[in-house]
Length: 267
Image (cartoon, one colour):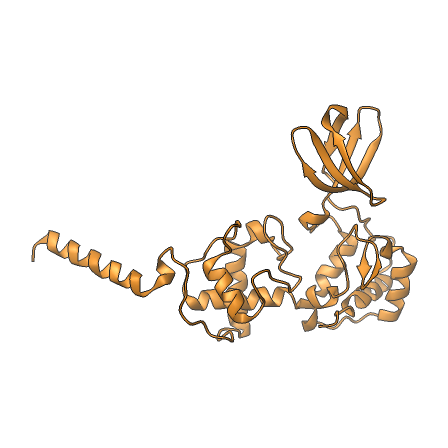
């Protein structure tokens, strides 16, 4: 058979295979998708974690805490949170956003689904050894409610903690207390604006353009500052939260972690 004929036949076979497998084309997958994830063993989830680290962390953060992309630790998803919804979102992407479609084998997408769901329930897998009641007393004494909300009580300068014990593992909770700058969601990144007058304005960064920088001050007031009045904008301390390393001994730290781990929300 002539070489040109062989090449032509190979091309037709490749086109036929692509048409039969939408995952290899640029078109959304519209075929039936299983209701329940068929790949959710511990080994599957570990493979999903590896895929997440290589494919998803640029937008969603190394621990799913968000950034350019959504925070995946909340258990709330714009396109739905069922296994089928998450599969479709990962496979097809989200139109009008930076979330792309992922053309990979179905089993790989399912493994990502399993890991993404685990990101929102890490705390359910662990039991803290500390005294949650003693930790609650320390939480109140330390003024944590000034910035963090539990249920309807508390402030909103920091992330809400109503169900943090469901979403976050023990290691993360402890790190957030002793190294609060380690992981900071985009919505809570701090900025310090040094004015030409010498005053420093600290708060949560909201937006910035060529003319001004907008932030929410620690008092809660929204403020827009003209850059013509600014000497320097500092972002070297991304969290407003102080470190409790040295402020709490190990027993106290374990107790606060136990209290935070006990906060599972109402789901």
